[in-house]
Image (cartoon, rainbow, N blue to C red; front, side):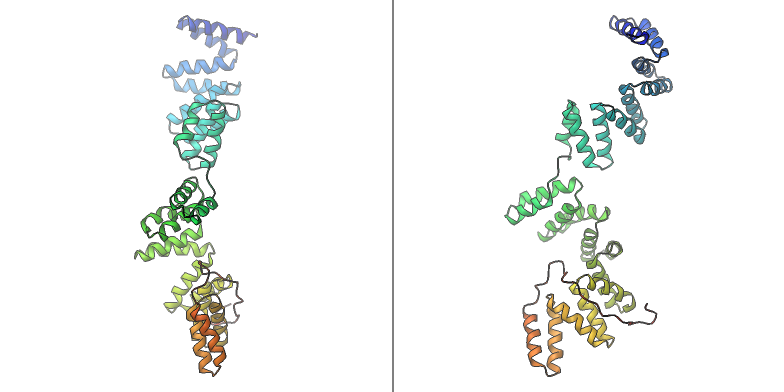
Length: 358
């Protein structure tokens, strides 16, 4: 036992017998010798007397000397001062040096900044190390291991709607954007449109273009055009073909062909049936008949009944009855396009439609 350890042992005995003056004197002596626990305990004594500046200085020296408890004390102090960045730094330091309390503290900070996966990991490790408070966090906070959205879809296919909803919701709360998007779809298809907004908004704000597009449609149906446009353009910027098709069709309907064409071309090239149909209509109006009809044919084969009927009318007018019959059969079987309106990729005709196009 070195001098510092001997002094600390004497200080503990003084503390147990209630000799406050001797306890403080011996702690001061141990701290002067650089003893880690002497520095930490003297810091606690100074903090109790209201001298936080001295306490922090002692705890910093104690951390340098290897006292993990001093890091925990610095974390608590930082939280009291609302310096959460410093608090998390000290909790992490304590956790990295084997403290279960440090693991729990770092988990709390991760939870409050929205990193549920890290919070769950730290609470789980702290609980395994014997920290009862961490075990309580695991029971009372939404950090349980998420279920994959496939589990929810399987339950939905089995007809267990209530369990599917619960699984989607649990996964969404744990940060799974796909689950949040699917939860919104689940509510939308049930006709519970107001319930669809929160999960879509959660996923949209975190950058999921499919959720941004869905949210735009929801706002448009509610007549909130400004919000609809904001989210639609975000989805377009992210490169979502369905969003490009939606905005392109809207611009084409407004006669803004030069702005609509690149969006429709990109969406059609990615396989959007509705974009192929809209672009075909634009080209036909611009007297690019062959290009327009090629795109209508692609849309018709993808399930667009309107495009199939239009091609049937053109074939009939040209005296090609056999071709007209084929397109009518496709029109009668229309509406079988994929649910998201996406089909096979289409080769979009090249060519300049507008002055100044590259």
